[in-house]
Length: 138
Image 1: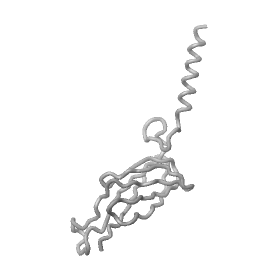
Image 2 (image 1 turned 135 degrees about the vertical axis):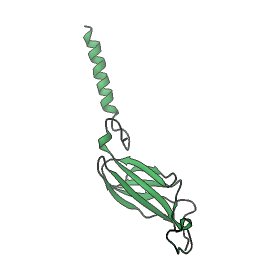
Image 3 (image 1 turned 180 degrees about the horizontal axis):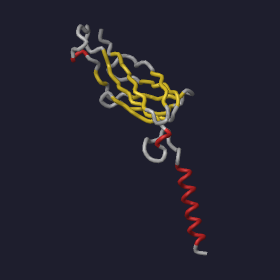
Image 4 (image 1 turned 60 degrees about the vertical axis):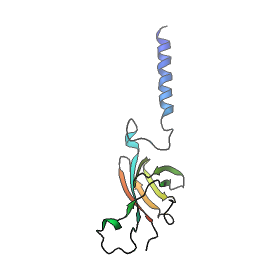
């Protein structure tokens, strides 16, 4: 008779653990589901920085990191798989394996919106992308 309560508790714990997985939009890259996602890293810059670039090596005229931008990661069906926030010109996140479209959003002080970037990621893979916003300087 003493084993029944223990078995019942174990069954309830097992059921609770099974229903908790897969509840988020993206999974983390550590723990039991580590191999189920891919990683996307994005370098986000703005340019040109000078009206007339005469020397490509001039540090004053190099593209500059963008800060506080939002990047939407959209699945083929148009649903948002993730939102990435840019800090110091860099953003990263994890998504399920598949094909996506990275959709840069408007940034205050920059002209228009950067072009969307299509990409594909596999489980365990890291994809490196670059987004360039136009400053309007000519």
